[in-house]
Image (tube, rainbow, N blue to C red; front, side, top):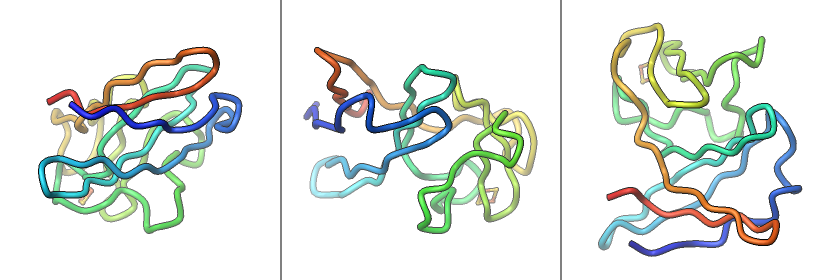
Length: 113
Ligand code: FES
């Protein structure tokens, strides 16, 4: 699986995110990396309910209270640490998680499969 450079870890401040593009065969998949309470997590930007991006192109993934990731389409709420949908039309499903690693302050990402 191809690993891509995301950026320096200090570029993504707490409760902020950065979008990336990953290749899956010939397909480009959009992903996003979040800083949740100082820890980094990454997901494919595709809701479990309908195959739509969670944000509306504005790189804004957190709910207003910052406790969840929010799908702006129909309001699904996901646990930022696991991608598990805790409320909404896809409750019980999960976002596709990305593999992340940090080396010398630099973040790298790849698809899990
Ligand atoms: S597309 Fe995300 S909740 Fe419907």
